[in-house]
Amino acid sequence: MRRTTNFVKSRGTVRCTLPAGQEIRVPVVPGILKHLTVEQLRNLLKDPDVVRKYTIEALNEAPWPVLCKFPAEWLKRCIGDAHLNPRRARAIAFLLA
Image (cartoon, rainbow, N blue to C red; front, side):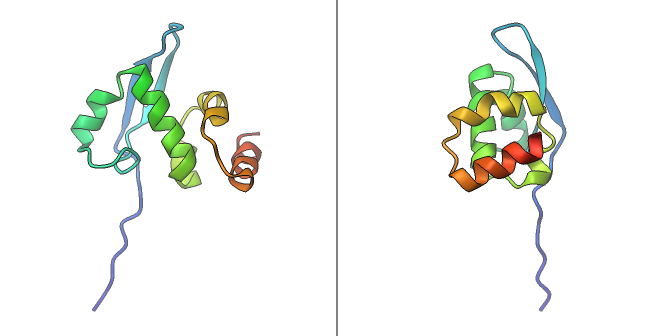
């Protein structure tokens, strides 16, 4: 029997306007926020609070091929709130430098 593996991948991007008026584009990746369809995720990611939680969850869980699709400056702003283990925090900071 063959075993297939589904790799995590982006299903497009969503634009979100932050409270400061800055607009960012974040990737739509099913699985970062659990149990949501792609369409539900697209609708939720228009809210800045949801985008922040989504980004923090991605920093905690997502592999680098997913994280590199986020705006680097946005990841740098959210990394302090992610409560990462020190090794992962150093690795992500290195990759964002």
